[in-house]
Image (cartoon, rainbow, N blue to C red; front, side, top):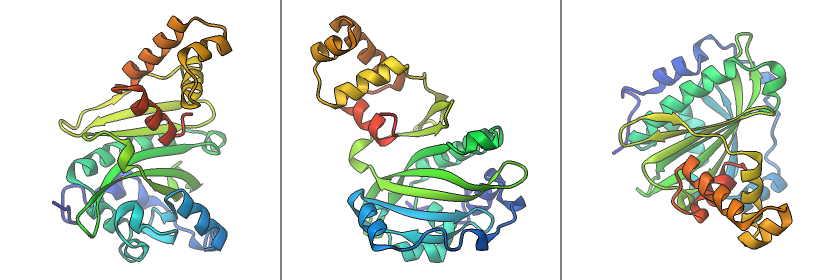
Length: 261
């Protein structure tokens, strides 16, 4: 089932969330920001990613670089022609509601940040798309602000999308908001539409996750960090509990996708 632009969470709803009706777009400032260079296209292809600049006033894509078909099942020209409205119309209904909630959280968070904090701000949101062939792809949408207006709203966003279909569990979406001093993670339950902020992982836990990702055993990690094997395993269990993951592989996939390690 697809959502059209006359639905409850249509384009006008997201205009309100992103405060885009009060943004003055200055397209000329970023018109030549990205060039469709062979090197950039090759790099994006290797990462199974695509890059775009979004004008949140007009809800349009100013440019789109890379092949979007293997990522979300639609050619990039469809996004350039249809804008954000097309993007929203191809989401699964449950994920569209989750995206609405996460957009509200992101907008409120961004407005609270200083210009200095915005220099290192990133947002990560995952969502599911129904492709032209009917297949469903899960996409990770990573966004950074190129420009804000005087009220602190993002006016131009640089977005990187990647296919993470094989890395995520169904019925849940996640949002990560980060800058130099903050790292917030939220989880949306797509069954009951509840949203909760997850516990923060400690520096030690992330350190152990990085070493685990390098295929070190608990014994090797314990020796490297001068702690006991029991402590290593306790940290690993705490990470699974905090992020509600079923096993270490799911945990590492999540942490890697959301660039926590």
